[in-house]
Every structure is written in structure tokens, then in C-alpha cells.
Amino acid sequence: MHTVVVGTSGVTASDVLAVARGGARVELSEEAVAALAAAREIVDALAAKPEPVYGVSTGFGALATRHISPELRAQLQRNIVRSHAAGMGPAVEREVVRALMFLRLKTVCSGRTGVRPEVAQTMADLLNAGITPVVHEYGSLGCSGDLAPLSHCALALMGEGDAEGPDGVVRPAAELLAAHGIQPVELREKEGLALLNGTDGMLGMLVMALADLETLYRSADVTAALSLEGLLGTDKVLAPELHAIRPHPGQAASAANMLAVLKGSGLTGHHQDDAPRVQDAYSVRCAPQVAGAGRDTMTHARLVADRELAAAVDNPVVLPDGRVESNGNFHGAPVAYVLDFLAIAAADLGSIAERRTDRLLDKNRSHGLPPFLADDAGVDSGLMIAQYTQAALVSELKRLAVPASADSIPSSAMQEDHVSMGWSAARKLRTAVDNLTRVIAIELYAATRAVELREGLTPAPASRAVIDAVRDAGVQGPGPDRFLAPDLAAADAFVRDGRLLAAVEKVTGPLQ
Image (cartoon, rainbow, N blue to C red):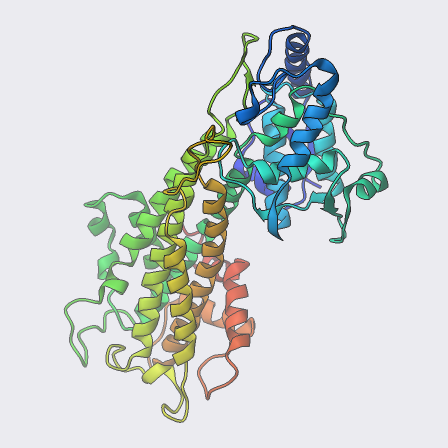
């Protein structure tokens, strides 16, 4: 099994995906263990002094004015975890919790938090044992970190609360730890706070969304090319020299992908045959511009994610010169903004895909295709309601594009009076990515049928490869009406698991 070694820095998006989705093992480097021990010595020295230090010998948030005596500090750390583990709603996905735990471990290992090496090792032990704390949908405002989600994870380290075992069954965390020979941790000064005070949940979901969107944007270039073929459109608008004079990198990449898919097509260039038209509709002609803008949005989001992966988010932090200082780095605004930006781009990509699908189904705009791509229109409804489903998904995508980060709701007796709502932005982006996959799958379903209905014209070799592969995957071609939901589900799976891209790239080579 792949192993990810966590040092004081250098964790990558690939590491996050390997642990969250691939079940990779986690090990602490010698450098990380040494940094943990050195930072802990500083915290222990401060704890021994009579002067109050936030997070070490004081209460938290609006209660930070109280100095906590030494005999109550272990209880203080337990209490912050228990009281902050106040999430509600459905349990979030296993991969999200594993990303959350791994990213918190990454920050702990930076040597900036003051957590003992044994606590960090226990965090790694839980990940390696496949123990996943139950984390609920609601509870984070995205400021002072993802407090409730991280608290539920810290609670499991203490042997409290519930967790899911490697078999998928939820049990008391104490039972699962015992079954795997893991000793619950006894938290000391600052450790409870350090386990809660990070933007790890929203960052983990950003990293995973970016990985999914990379696949979806390339998939959307493929389905746009297939729709162009089905509509007998022109590929001249995809010429590199046209995109070079508006030098957005994403736009050029999308146009190049569409050209690669359309190479050798016998369906393009017929736009002036029976019903001459000077230009294709925007949803066809401007596909690279819209998809390209989304790609460039992802480039910016990756920059933010990489900076966050290099960060040590905690409050207070142990600085290299030994000072322990309070800060506001736990505020999730940088991550929240790009999560919302990606949801906007996803909504627009879904919207333009739906317009192409609708055009394929409308006999007044499809340039010779049967109404709704039906076998016997009137007796058969064809893909009429598949487009309804796609439209419903796009409408939902538009609602999900409303930014969470534009909202703020004060908390903690007005001490925490501005929050990022980054966790909420991440949660809705996950839904948006899920729905965008379905939208692209429906365009794929319609476009492949349209291409097959163009009798006497030969599609591009890459298009033919897609059609053959999707039919082998159980998505049926033209014919009389049938139960459509299984076909749509099979098309969704074909896009979601990467088989669409695999079929294309066997012909075109890797798409951009």
C-alpha cells in the first residue's frame, strides 16, 4: 500500500487524495517528530509560568479572560473538545473526514502547534486503522477553523463519540480504538485547541473538488465536440490562431481538446448545406470560451489550495523564535472565495451543456435531426424528459452558485463577529460537482444518439470510440422509447469513473 510521509512541510494535493480516497498509510518523519517535541517544550515552559497565555492557560473565545489553574488545564482541554463536538445533521462522507484528519495532522506536524508527538502519532494510527470519526453536516462557520467537524475527530482520539470502522459499521470510538490496540490520548495544555483550530475540512473538499473538476472539464470538451458533430457545426472556430489572439490559457486548451476529438470528422463543415447558416449558436461556438474560463478559475483555486497546503493554521502558534502568538490565520476567507468561484463556474458549464442538449432535441434548431431524437416522434417521446432532468439539475446548479462566503453571522458573544462560511461553500460545491457530472452525462447521451442518427456521415475516430465504449457500458443507442433511468445512470457512471476520457484518449492521446 502507498505510504505518505508527513514532514514539517511539503504535503501535496496528491498526498491528500492518496489518504482520503486511496486509503494510503501515513507515517511521521523524524524531522516532524523532532519539531513536535521542540515546540512542546516551549508550550510546557509557558504553562509553568504564572502569566496567562491564550490557549495554554486561559479559556477560549469570549471566555479567554479567565486564567485557568494548572490542576484544571487537562479538564479544560477535554471540555473544549466535548463542548465543540456539537455538529448536527447527516454524517459527511468518509473521504471528507479522512482529508480533514490528514490535513490537521499535516499542520500539527509543522511544529507550530505545540502538540506532543504521541498525539500526532495517534492521529496517524486512526487513519491507518481505517477509523473514521462521525462528522456531521452542520457545525462549522469557517472561522476559528472548522470547529465542530474537527472536534468530532478530536473526540475520537480521546476514545469518545462514535466512529465508523474499516468495515463501514458505526460503533463507539472507544471500542474501535481498543480493537486496533490504540490508546486514547489524554490531552494537555493547548492540545485540545490545536486539534480544532484549522480550515482543514474546507481545504480537503477544495482539493478533492479540483481533482473531480479536472476530469469534468476535459469530459465537457468531449461532449461539446460530439454535440458540434451532431449539429453539423463547423470546427473552424476552434483554430489555434483564433484563440491565440485572446490568450486565455484555459480557452486555448479547451479548443485544442475539441479539435483533437473532431479530427477526421465527416460531420463538421456542413453548416452551409441544406439550411445555410453563417455561424453556429453561442452554446456551440463559444464552448471553449466558457469552459476555458472555468479552467482558469481552477488554476487560481489550485494556487490558493497549494498555499493552504503549505500553511500551518492554528491559534495561537509557536513561532520559530519561540514566541507563542495569537493570530487570525484560521479565517477561511481565502478558501471560501475560491470554493464559491468554482461553484459559479460549474453552474455555467452545466448551463451551456444543457443549451446544446436542448438544441439537439429541437427539430427547428437541430438541422435535420428528428424531434427529441425520437424513433417515431409522437408515438415516442425520445429524450424529451432526459432534458427536463438536465434542466432541473442546471437550475439546482444555479442555486448552488449563490456564494456562501458573501454571508457572515456573528458568534461567540460577538468575539467572532465575522466568519467565512467556507465549510458551507465546500459542502455546496460537492453537490454542484456531483450534479455537473450528471449534466455532462445527459449531453453525452443525447450527442452520441444524434451522431448515430446522421446516416451516411462518418464521425471522427475519437467520437466513434466514445460511441462504441458507451454502448458497451450499457447506454443504448437510437430506437423506440424505453425505460431511460438505467441508461442515464450508466452514462453518469461512464463519465464519473473516467471511462469517457479513457475511450477518447486511446485515439487522441492525453487531452489538456
